Amino acid sequence: MTFLILTSLILGIFSGLILFSPENLHFLPQVTQGALALLLFCIGFDLAQERDLFQKIKGLPKIAAAVPFLIALGSLLGTLLISPLLNLRPGQGALVGAGFGWYSLSALIIAQTYDLTLAALALLTNVFREILAILLIPLIAAKLGHLPALAPGGAAAMDVTLPFIARSTSRQTALLALYSGTVLSLLVPILIPLLIRLLAA
Image 1 (cartoon, rainbow, N blue to C red):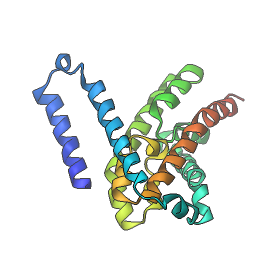
Image 2 (image 1 turned 180 degrees about the horizontal axis):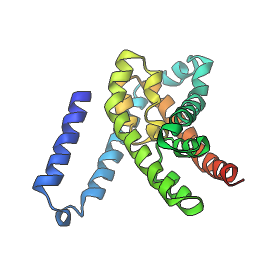
Image 3 (image 1 turned 45 degrees about the horizontal axis):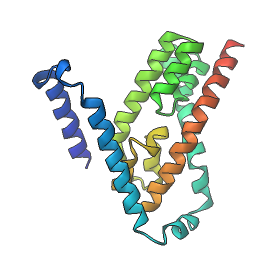
């Protein structure tokens, strides 16, 4: 699956550079939104086919409920550690990581209330996180297990990366991805303003 994803991405880049001009692609946002909606519909339909799914969810270890918070902690710690390499203060690094893959909202809040340069970095970081998640989820699921495959997508586990998680893992994990992505999405508008206040203090 990783090979198919990477091939599709490369073909898309090639087509965008060589075959099509921007004037002829006004329909592209509607096509991508429609494709994502169809994928999510199919995942929901597939989940509904397993009647005892919710019993299986109840049978998951209690640590499963902590998955989104562990992903959030890992994201923040990772950016704290790497921030000196980018000449950032640790708090600024954490601010970039606190987008958890939700590039549009995190960049917007940072741009409007803190710093445009850091907002651009947050945008690029979270966009690349989503692209890498799409590429890595099948590999992580195969090599490390189903639960670790939720981590790369972050907040996008509830939408953009959900089809890849569902395809690479199990129905249980797909439902857990919805939960994890939702919790992380709720954390973004709470954590980012809090970190900005701490940085401004």
